[in-house]
Image (cartoon, one colour):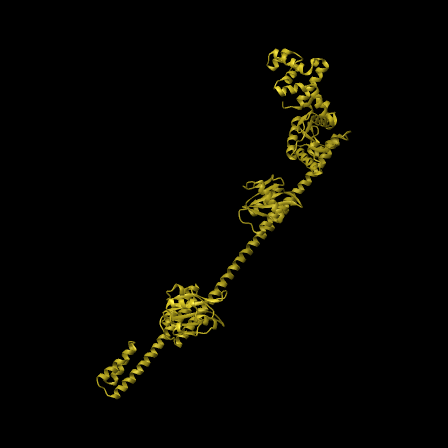
Length: 639
């Protein structure tokens, strides 16, 4: 075998990347052929050179592979989208490039002061994948604490590390023996450890350590880049939210300014609560109720039901306490107040959520509503005083210039030459406090004004002058409506109609006497007119404070036994007496009117004689009995 042929054979082995053992083949063949020693020496030298060339090519191939892996890692970092994907790719490349059985990564937990398993590749043990390493414990803990690479060919027998039962159990379950760990560093700070490990004893050479260090550096860059991206995204999200908030705030401020200008204009041009409610719903959307202090509706805009009275009271109390509008379910409440006085509330059902500036619009609307209500009250009170002064002058004696009175009345849209009735309200409607008297007078002024009349306070009475001819109906209406306002029975006496200024004073005094007569008859809380009471009313109108007591005593002494008999037996003696006197004492006509037999009338009158005495038909007694029957009828008008 020539030297040339042997060299070619070694080159062929290099060309097909033969295993090192195959390079012994040419030398074995030469020995078998009995070549001399000098030729064998040449072959051994050629084999040595060929193996060197092979090792150089292998190192270059490995370096190329490593560089390709690092290049791929850099490419992953350049297109970083998901940190977990990048870290898994780095750990997977570390395992492949180092030819390790397992590769994994741990990161430091600054809050807990230890390190935890972040990514694994090739691991089969769930316990190992959940390991947490105390700082300084195990190989990884020592790397994380010191910031320097550590390698062990046999972890279980290496005494350089602080072994713990939990770590050794996890490593043993995974079957790891040789472990290489390098730090993940950001500047001078160690943030974790990257590992390569085998399930059999093997040394890790310097090149492998350098390669894993490079991969760890890329992993640290990936982690830091992901952190910066997360912070950037968070900052952008915060900026976007802030921009949205600023735009919304700017829009709400513009709405608030527009609403303020509009409500100011409403006040200046004499708008009402309805206009304010419409302005609020146009700016904020939704529907709105304006309520007075009693919960009565002042204005409604849009489709919205009135809340329960209890809910309104509680929400308004909360709004007054907080000095802000308050939310109860889908509704917003803003108290309408003037100082300590509650004037009502605005109730808004918005289409969208209210921001702070929108609440301010609702609260400003409540303030404007309070101003309008106070202004309306002031105007009403001023007009009421004017109307009251006119009525007081009309019922005073002697009258002053009637033409001047007519002129004053025309300015108030009152025609004194049209028929009017006068209604006098008793002092049972007026409590002891001045506020209650003012409340009754205010009600009377509003009541009369709404009907084109007048009202005033005079001599402890409240007097109303109302257009029309039905004095009795007006008295009963006033008594009924004012009783609801005061919560107590109210008595009202009326007289009229009267036409012309000069007739009003006398009509007032008749109404006043009628009121006195109602008290004497025990008809407190009712309304009637002088025409309905007749001559008895005129008589009783002058009896004074003891009128009711005197009438009661008179009735008991005169017809009391007959009334009591009817009440006990259910008979009709009082009705028979009224019919008998009503037909001039004719038994037949009385029987016809009562739809009974004449004998029945006779028997009833005999019973009356037994109860009242035999002289009950004498002229003077008969007059007293008839008067008593009339008083009895007036005391019980519904009977």
